[in-house]
Length: 125
Ligand code: THU
Image 1 (cartoon, protein in one colour):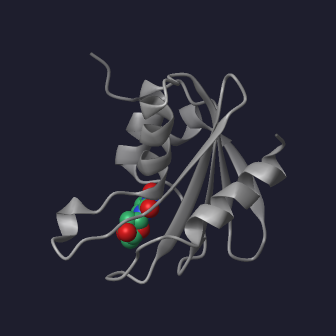
Image 2 (cartoon, protein in one colour):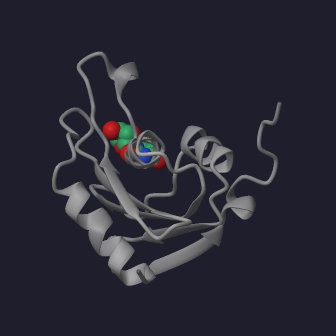
């Protein structure tokens, strides 16, 4: 599974995004250490605080299937130029040892970041 394929899978998940209130539709796919892919999309709610981001939806799908080591996360969005993950999603990525975050901008440009550069000082217990 190369980065391009992972981005394509995130794009497929984005087709199901429920961005009714913000107009933003996000898809994310995660690659587990064992090479499996899980995807998620943002799901908004009339009670705004109940909204879940695409990245956490994808990460939680992987965890629910028994995967706790995630290598990469790819993110694609419609309705925003460059979907840098929010702090909450970065913190959840840290929990499951994500190394790389691949962000596909609306202009087709793809940037890859080490998670540690996006979240240099995560909360730890
Ligand atoms: N959103 C994500 O899916 N991922 C992020 O990292 C940040 C924001 C979603 C949540 C909400 O549905 C919409 O984008 C606007 O905030």
